[in-house]
Amino acid sequence: MDKKYKMICHMILLLVNAAVIAAGIFFFGSGRDFSQNQKENSLLIGASYMTMNNEFYKIISEEITYRVEAEGDRMVLRDPALNVNRQIEQVQEMLDMGIDVLIITPVDLESVTEILEQAKRQGTIVVVLDTNVQSDELADCTITSDNYQAGVMVGEYFLSQHEQSRILVMTHEATKSGQERVQGFIDTVSVNENIEIVRRIECEGQLEIAMPRLKQAIEEGIEFDSVFCLNDLASIGAAAALEEKGLLNTVDLYGVDASPDSKALIAEGMMRASAAQFPTEIGKEAADVIYRLLDGEQVEKDILVPVKLITEDNVEEFGIDRWQ
Image 1 (cartoon, rainbow, N blue to C red):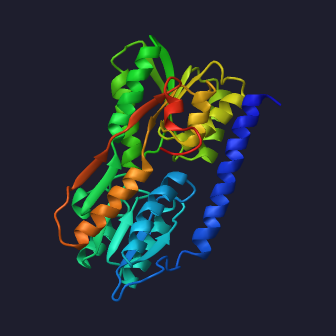
Image 2 (image 1 turned 90 degrees about the vertical axis):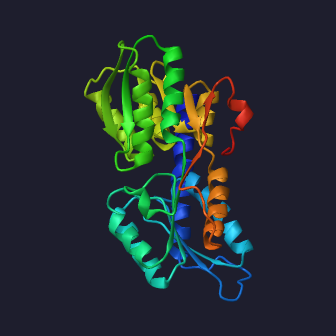
Image 3 (image 1 turned 135 degrees about the vertical axis):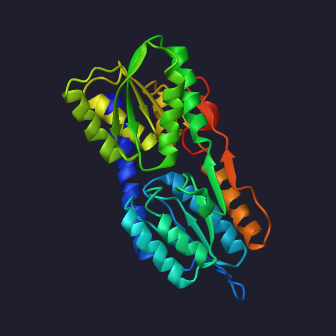
């Protein structure tokens, strides 16, 4: 079996196993109290991330949980698994429990509006992470990576590598973060009239959706020489599809996240670049903001965490086996 194919299959297997383990942990332990030394009249912090099959969110959650435990407060976690109706139900459940703070990464930026309006009426502090909600007024603070700049950064590098190209773009239209990354990339590369976006493919930022949909596009005979993915779960799925079709050596692959798996692909020359997000920094920033808000302090309404470009030239500096 080809080394590249083995490597990609191994990555997919690890991601699938991680998703199964995470699902078990969050299904059976979702109501568990994470605080070991609760203070009297401890506060209750509720969190609903988009999905827990992405290590990015696990790292953010861990950083917040460390701080919550240190403060003697309690944490409730829920995993909607990319189902917006489930997310709304889970947030409603947490609001009924009387949470003091809601941390949310919306599955769909529009559909959670009503439940967030209820949270605000109840006096619950709302902290939005990773991707915006439809109305910023519903959030006491929104903390994201600089998603538009991530797309711009990858686009600028793309222009330095291509005088002409036919690009296929993997999207996640229900999230503002996905929209902004794609828009930043397209706005940047479109200055060259010899670069064409031949198709956008909705993949929800998920490996198991990106892989078959890219394979289908190849089988339909779409001609392209580059793929831009809104995140690196989609990038891994795209890499698997390209390798299966014998195109990984001839199609340039770009993404956003700089996950350990994508950095491994970059180091092996199977992926050209990815804009790095910093989940540890996002988690620490979120924890700090939560306790400042609880103390009645003013915080910035929108906080952007900078991103950095990772290519074959600097990937070793960031550590291939871990998130930065």
